[in-house]
Length: 503
Image 1 (cartoon, rainbow, N blue to C red):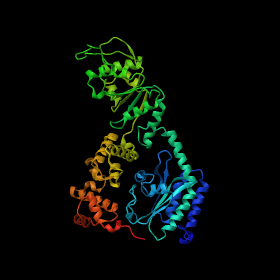
Image 2: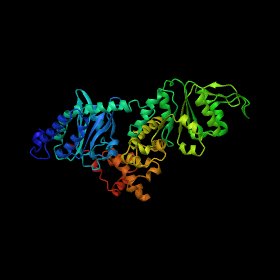
Image 3: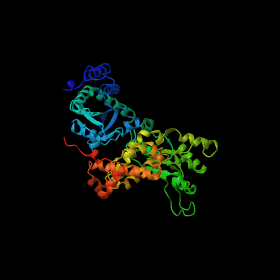
């Protein structure tokens, strides 16, 4: 039936030429997973595909991720992540059955998470990719409705069956790479960007030893989480992990906090105090902001590093320190050494195994992963039903430069979850710093036009959820039907585009 529906004599279109080309690609590149890209290009040339994706289902996390795409930007591709049963793509994996969406504007379940389908008149077809009885992922396309969507769905199913072996090879290759590079990615850290792979490799390498580690990076990048990951993967994991923020303690108290003191050592020392190093015995001590140490404290710390022993302030007893030291700083220590503000011998004792944690702007592909992680965490903590981030909000998150790094993103998503009044985080839920850094033309607009754009976005979402029912959308927004009608007219919105057509 498929073969009769298409002109097989056309030089650049038709089923037989397409299947022949795919067969030739698979025959030459059977063991090369990268064949999937050329196959999507062939589909675009010969079947009028606007966009196409191959999404893989991970075995461990049971998450669908777009791996190969045609017609999508890197940012759009990075957004293509779905849980099983989530959206059209997730439903195809859950049921194992193909789905046709004749017009995406009429389908509330079509999430458009990538943001690539800008036209509401586009049709969407998604079919499962199976190897024996296992579903490996999905093959999906955006096409124009030419009255042959059923034929195209059957053609896609044939192609999916042909490429199943290549998809399995691709997934296996990715899992081997993940096992080698980031398969041991610590639970404490989120992200799979290329910039983070050296960090994961370094954690895996150094964790098994007692080597002193110096973690470097800007404020807010997650240096403490790296220290937690090293400790958790080390043989000291059953021992304590004691954290000290050196910048938060004045010089007069820092030595006492670190090394303890004897009664009467100074005014107010009415009893012996056990220091953080003693509390960390058999485990790890994390010294954050090591660059803020005073010269006197640097000398004492150097002795511990060299001789593995310490004395309490005001005491004479020598105490052995069975402690692994992990230090961190956001300061540039080399100029501080040249200026005499940081001891050179201490620097070389600390810098045995340096780990640089990249800034968030250097790992932009992790922004959405981190944002989703924080949304899930804060929604659970605050007992809210927030489940996803809207397309425009995602665009704003991806466009922002994040000077405060992961800590700023975490605070941003916590605020967004708290102010969200439905299951979606919209653009207007994000802080003003992101509103003005949208990177689009809206950033240069005035207040009134910006607010109008936000209001129009909300009305579109409400109508889409209500499937074009004006009364239901008005109730969801807490306005009267009259007000709803005025706003729809003001923004030139056609509710009929969201109504389901009876077939």
